Image 1 (cartoon, one colour):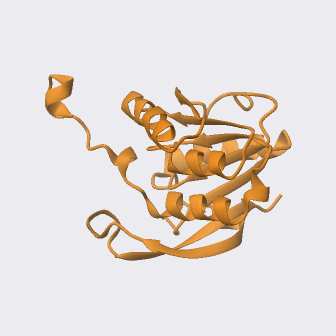
Image 2 (cartoon, helix red, strand yellow; image 1 turned 90 degrees about the vertical axis):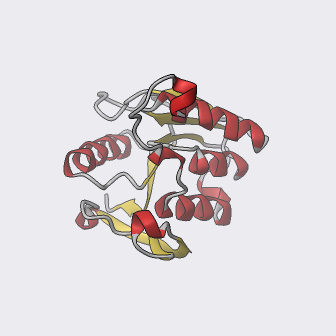
Amino acid sequence: MELAAGRTGLDPPFWAFAWAGGQALARYLLDHPETVEGQRVIDVASGSGLVAIAAAEAGAAAVTAYDIDPVAAAAIAVNAAANGVAVHAACADILDQDGLPSPDTDVVLVADAFYERDLADRVMRFLERGCTRGAAVLVGDFGRAYLPRDHLRPLATYDVPGLRMLEGSDIKRTTIWAPLA
């Protein structure tokens, strides 16, 4: 990547990893296609697009995947095309918007985004705004430090392959959460 970018010192492409929460949320959508079937879906902090692609494969009417990294947004488009699904990839930070990016959003998906306190607070406020506007919200997370468990209820649990060098184990027990409200 550094060679292609013509510079060194680039951040590692953390978006490129299939983190445990994303794997579990993608599996949940494929196991429960009724969750997104015919719905307009957004995937926040989409990374490689794994969850967005699963939503499209599960029958979502429209999927938009958001990430703040332009390389991730490009990868989402490539990965969606490679999987034969339509996913609109957008490079944007939407967390501090007044509402949802599209008022007709039916489902908001997010995985593995509760690893820093400030980010976790921003994500949770965004998800609460989504709920207020009538969107269903699903979160995939194995229990990161800033996961707001007191605002969420578990829906399902999966054992998924972990990234030992990054997550400390080969298998991560990961939960799919929905807001209490």
